[in-house]
Amino acid sequence: AGVQFNALMFVGILHANTMQSFVARERTVFYREKAANMYNPWFMNLAVGVTEIPYVAFNTFIFTNIFYWMVGLKADAGVFFFWYLVFYLWISFQVYWGYFLGIALPTAEIATAVAGGTSSIFSLLCGFMIAREQIPWYWRWLHYADPLAYAFQCVESTQFYCAAAPSTTECPTIELQQPDGTSVTIAQWTYMQQTFNLVYRDRWAYIGILLAFTR
Image (cartoon, rainbow, N blue to C red):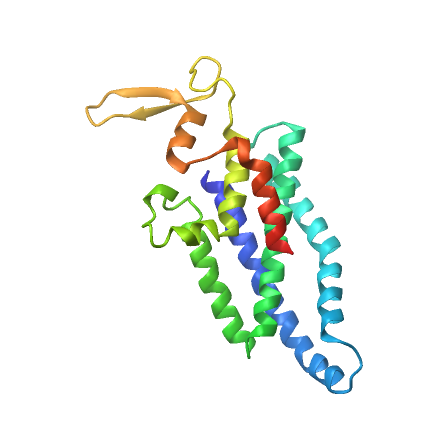
């Protein structure tokens, strides 16, 4: 669980911060061209959004091919491409979020600081560090507004799902140490469900939510 969370979190932060320097370089040109009525700002934003699609698709595909097999994730073509889709949507959100902060805030330094702050909130409330049910009720709305929560749900549920759970004979298992020194063997999927509140059947709904965040 941790290695997938780290991949989502740190690669996302890298892409969001990369956009700050890009926007800082383009800001002067944008103001000059806007003052001269050369083009509508909406078209510039549209152009940036469209041109990032192939770059992010290629970049995330290369990373997924290296990372996925290197850490030994599930050797299944359908799960692999689903993982890639989730990763692509999450990185796309981070790129567009970084771009938005870069144009909405007065300086690149402030935009970078805010991007770092929001990334901390994303990671804290996505359900990995603190399970959803353990988040105080007055902060839980932030969990549902957190795009990383849906990406995390998707990648973890598809990796650990076992239709035969809680059977320990047909599913991969994990051994848990008890306070009295004994151990209990349970299915990995059962443990992940109980620990992280994973819901496998909602994975495509989460994909739709991630898609909405990128738009």
